[in-house]
Amino acid sequence: MTTQAGLSRLSLNQRTTASWSLPEAIKGCLDAGLGAIGIWREQLAEVGLDEACRLVTESGLRVSSLCRGGFFTTADPAEAKAAEANNHEAIEETAGLNAATLVLVPGGLPLGDRDLQAARDRASKAIEQLVPYAHELGVTLGIEPMNPIYAADRGVISTLAQALDIAERFDPADVGVVVDTFHLWWEPGITDQVQRAGDRIVSYQICDWITPLPADTLLARGMMGDGHIDFRSFTQSVARAGYRGDIEVEIFNADLWAAPPSDVVNTMAERYLNLVLPYLGGDAP
Amino acid sequence: MTTQAGLSRLSLNQRTTASWSLPEAIKGCLDAGLGAIGIWREQLAEVGLDEACRLVTESGLRVSSLCRGGFFTTADPAEAKAAEANNHEAIEETAGLNAATLVLVPGGLPLGDRDLQAARDRASKAIEQLVPYAHELGVTLGIEPMNPIYAADRGVISTLAQALDIAERFDPADVGVVVDTFHLWWEPGITDQVQRAGDRIVSYQICDWITPLPADTLLARGMMGDGHIDFRSFTQSVARAGYRGDIEVEIFNADLWAAPPSDVVNTMAERYLNLVLPYLGGDAP
Image 1: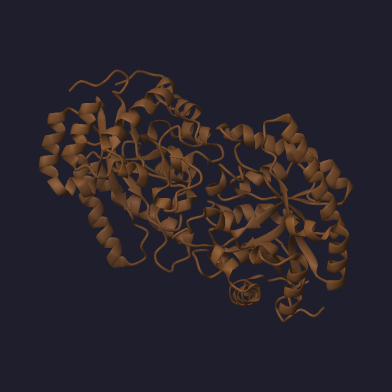
Image 2 (image 1 turned 135 degrees about the vertical axis):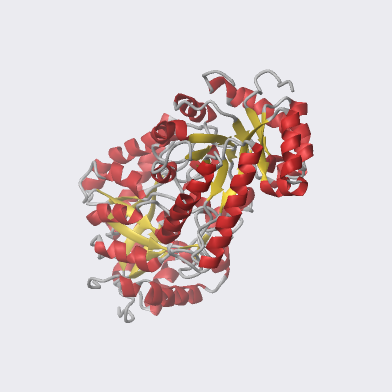
């Protein structure tokens, strides 16, 4: 493979081009000259792990993340057991793909349950229970704190500080954090928290916070430069913290999904070159 | 006036019944047996301060808050001066109405501006500049931290911790905080922060976080009991912190605005009696 100048650390998260299968997304990354891809388990399942590993190896792309494990806030023992089994599978896939991390989305409040602290405690406990298996397979779990807009229905861990409070109980090789601009741009003291995270940053995901928010808040993310986030200062803080991994563009947005995926990839590459790359410092891999 | 059993500390924020003028809202409060009202400046302007003061005095209602001052994140000196003048007027109205607090909504990022920290610093500085006049008129400013969903376009102060970091630089009689369940229910460590707030809590505002969020996020608030917030534990923490003031229901919601206002007031009273009052502890005023 040959990456385009400046794009060696840029990764396409498959969710940004939701209509592409895994083979199509891999081809799209290669055509655009990217260095990495963030793979989703749904598209992985369509081709199977063996074929996916073969395609990825052949492509020469790094796998910057596997999305996603987690969703372990249930209070029901049977559901918790099923979630654990599902996460074990995800760990195996992450190891097979040699992905930099398995992204853990904690999950929201169970239906009718209003005890947020208890849900947070269960998420923390579930992570703890996954660590031995992840360690055994050489997988680094990446806790993803999520914008409070999703605290009820998707991710009960709301700040980087909170994610680090959990991650720091474990070896950095086993548990890290996912730093996503959309989720964290507003967090008071975020620069200090990114510095605190240091080598626990296992993924730097980027997209913008746009207003007015699209009607479906799950699809509320925007292309870098279209919204309110200062990618210069955020990227500089991530670089200063020592992050040298891939920069993954993950955008859930109905308008982008309706556009030709290769156009979306080209736009994200252009925005990355202008808004992010100049502030990454350090050496590209 | 005679309040209904249990409703002496319940306050109708005018925004919950947006179609009512101030005289109509006052009558609505009296008809339902509430003890207080939260007044909006727009409806106040329709009748004028003198007439409003007369109506309020005649009604016997307490004014639990005047909404709202703030919106002082501009970087433009002329706009900042206009915002200050506007806030001075709001302080005068708060004093005239003998309202418990002037709610300060910080404002969002100026158009095209992505420096969130600078906007936060300007908000903090603007509050500092208002304090002498508020003190002179015996008005307590109430900083309202807002859900991060509004960080870009409405309120750059995102957590109670952050609001307290500002408020604690001043005398509690001059600067307090507004504790709103919708804005703060997700904040990690919120119970400790409410305890920390103590006698700086100048307003306890309630409404629910509902999912899916309505398409217009500015109207995303729900009636207590319709969403994910645990009003028991939140209310208990506010009571433990020593709050003995009014409990104001502030709901921005298009469906509620389309319903007969008196029905909305009755529903909010019923929900309050079931979900909030039992956990208030202490004595009603």
